Length: 139
Image (cartoon, rainbow, N blue to C red; front, top):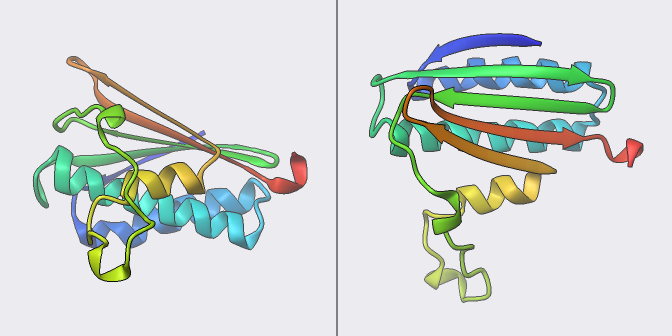
């Protein structure tokens, strides 16, 4: 298990990405699975910066990776504002392109890209998002 902290800034996203991509490769995920992890983590970090902290430079992004052969667990934690992921409906994707909203698909995307997602919040410990990606060759 490895943990690293990053400033809650958009210019930290490349370093967060490098951290999780290296772990995904170490877990033996294929290139599509590695990309799915990278995209889901990037989206989650943007949500933390935008919604939990309300802007850049207002908190830390803590990222823990747990590598098992054929499985990667990514844990993102922050001390920002909590939210209820159940209150976020899936976006309407069956509408003409012009009617699609430019925002609001991040959580949906994370759910589609990762195998398991769990969000917890605690007044004393902040927010914790746990995402798991398993290699399809192990299913």
